[in-house]
Image (cartoon, rainbow, N blue to C red; front, top):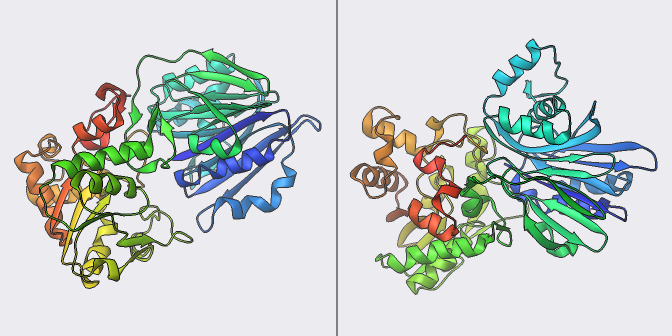
Length: 469
């Protein structure tokens, strides 16, 4: 996915920029970049580093002093190297995006045919952020250009633009990814994660609405485009991506996870001795489950946080399997003889379950039950790309459906309908595959109820195939 942070301050901004971007580190694991504009010298300063073998702070801390100026933007990216710096009829600017452009090849052909040239390639393909910049450059103003992006792309795109005088923030036209505005004495900032604000002394002003564009400097902010009426914010932000202290649309991540778990626990008739969250995003749900069920919460498994990133991140299968096994350490003393129930955010490929379930039995667990915050993932994400799957067929559910039907695309609507015969057969097959004592997924209805927004404002495409470009 990715997360960004932008700041305009009456003082040097590099400290706020550095820590503000760092507080988005859980949103991506591939690359990070910073850019500031130094008005005294009349130049942009930019740096981009890979995060695939280390963390954000280790890459940027040693070079912070070079980032001079009072305005800046930065990003944690799961896609292209960014920020990129552009010189155009709109002026010089730096830009970062959190985007997934599904029709990028068609747009690329169209622009090349019209005489436009691309200068940035990422892994042999067009850099999405450069594509966005080129579409912006076709406008007479930044607002006109951003409107062109909203009109032309299929997928999603939120962005920050650093000009020589200000920062422009534009949220995706359907609000699939968030942007939060904050302020403190002498400074304004925007971020993907409200978690970035408290320790930097920013107070939350408001969430930008879908398609809203604002421009700000150290003195204040002004709206350049009013928000639209339609929203399709990603439900997986609450289930998985979001940091527990972050909030989107007024709904705190940990509060939603707790509510999902409490709902499941209060209705679950399965007899268990304790509940445990698969760290980190399963913990809030497990605490809710324990409260709803009336059983203790035990730390039966812990994540070794200093070194291991998300298990689905590596593109190579054997490395994904290794990370999935090595990052989680079971606690035999808390497992021995227990009927243990574990809560997790989702099952994507099944990588994490593949090795760890048997380990729990080997450590003495009498029973291993699993409860999943998300409904079964039957469709790959078309809008923000929260999995690195190249196709729907890499999803565990599609492989299971293929085994049951002889065709992984058969009867998908029935498999997404909670408690239908085909849904139950799929869940039972997954349970058998991993040797779980029992397995249950949250329903879409429970997820949406916990989030607290109308269903029409929440994207659930990966669960039910609903589409809304």
